[in-house]
Length: 193
Image (cartoon, rainbow, N blue to C red; front, side, top):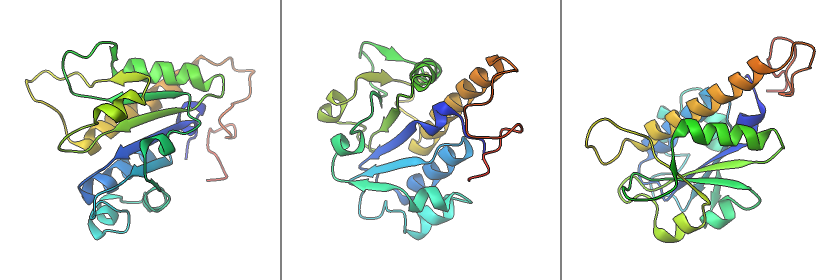
């Protein structure tokens, strides 16, 4: 698996997820982009990694799904993480950045060894005010239609993809005589994974 600083230092957090399919699909989404740090804050009764639908949707990403940290609070999930983005579909919130801009910010933080977390709320209600207050940044996925939001796992995939692209841009910009900082060999493959 290709591992880059921005993806290695990124955590994805689902707060009170309701559907096991979204938990499994989110694990798959982040793994495809080289991210393995996954946390579930108070998942619903069914939204647990061992649920058969979560396992079904996590195709070849069972290690990420089974390794998901289960915590009681968002504060516990983001403890020690310097840059935290809350995802929101709410209008009228100031200071919103796009997934691309968030990925650029995460990439800049990763250059200094700083970790980033991306926090996603419940499928029905999103993040509550108390959870939003714990996050220093806000992120919204732009949409053309007057649709209030997109599927949770799809939102995770979009953000993870932008992180991956940001990591590739940093790799491409690195001078040829500088060894890779992603733990990989000349081919960029991390033999430890």
